[in-house]
Image 1: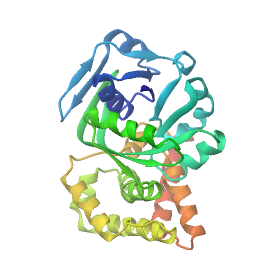
Image 2: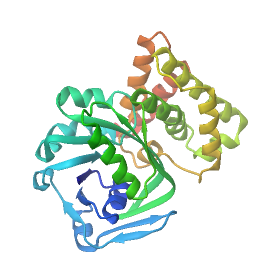
Image 3: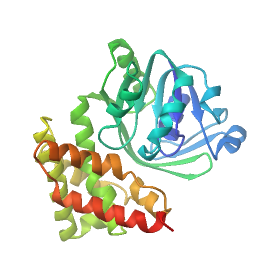
Length: 305
């Protein structure tokens, strides 16, 4: 299958790079790195084995990318509005778009724009960062869960899983709603708390007070998911996420990096939307609501300058 990567950063550079290394035809949309990658290629330093792509199909505009079978959207959700214009040149009648993004409600909003589009939720469990032009640093983990939102062609979805696995990416099919809310169990506490307290994941769990607060926030997500009828998001999963985070390399989540560099944070889809959905189901999340308000205060300080 023919792939396109929209957002060749920490996530898109890693997954797209792995797919290209395995022999797939992959087209990369780049912005500031375009000239560098066109001339020098893409470097992926990885705990699972580093590699370099000498020749990269690099583009500055999607108008130049041929129609593709699978498009991996790896943009921050703050750039979701760009998809209205980015996607059409690359779409054919059977194209699948995989949203490898954080938050709740992304697929519904995209489907409203493109009613016939086949959409998959991509939930990446990975510690990866872009450390320079065309240079990705993959620190640990790297699996991806794929939740079928609106793909009618089951063989096409199966081929997508196979391509990921053949590229040595651990890929699993999961139920869509369960997958999104399971990712929120980790994302909502850790992204916001590292910003609010100006810290890293390991320090939050090294302190008994903040570890308990993280656990309380995770349980708010669990309660909300249950109120919305989502199964298999429970206390055991919370403990699994706590244990996984304690074992991982000390980490600054993407929202912390955005705050550090005074970029817009993904508050809307990571906090506002799930909080609204939970309230509709009669299950408020007071500690996460407070965190959302703190994040808006922090963001307001630097974006208003």
